[in-house]
Length: 333
Image 1 (cartoon, rainbow, N blue to C red):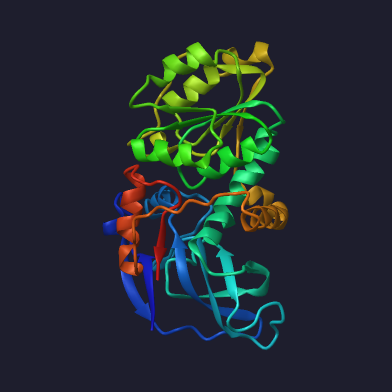
Image 2: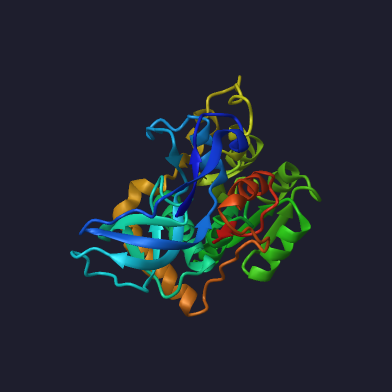
């Protein structure tokens, strides 16, 4: 049987919205591949908007298997499959597939990896997002100053390392001692700001006034404002998430000058990154990141808290939303 976590109704809470069901292991067609998942990646904010019914481009039909990213082992291939064989380790990234023990995928949607580890799951797609956001949206140049919020998270800890490889001045923001230690151990951050030890706005206003070439923000609200205020001439503020807004009952209503009042005279800009809009560049990004990792030039940090089994997905999601994670949060099967 195939154990699955599904959305059975829309709700504000994952425990109410989801349930575990068991279905027969699916039969594959000639052009399909059956994978036994080994690790699942947790995307708690995206999942939450999905089980609330707020993702406009996803037509959720109950029961709906959710989850996006997984790594596993090929256990069966269709007669038309030539790019993978039984026993191969693979990575998959597809909306509505991951939170189950077995999944079916097509040959176009599978990526071969050296081994089915949590590290390769982190690289694809989270590392891919970091690479493409820096390249396409931030347009980060050698020697620039970049400030990264949520820098110890699955995305952030890759961003700061890739930025340092461009000889940038890297400012990493976090909120807990263990997150601070993770960033120190990466050895790539020129300044670490723990906002529970130092006042973030005061530090940025004093040390980085008009000096932020790239603000890389997945938090929003006060963080967005602090980055925006201190953008350098031609600076770019990259929005990669809206964590604080998405935890609130509704988006904050801002009554003040329009955003261009802050950036017009600097020739600065505010930009948003969405991974799926650069799908044609995913292979390039994966190959580059896999090579860096295999050569020991990129550290991949997976959160040390053990979550095991389909039953633990909801707990892992709540853990991530509570801001407890250091590195990528994964569930082992």
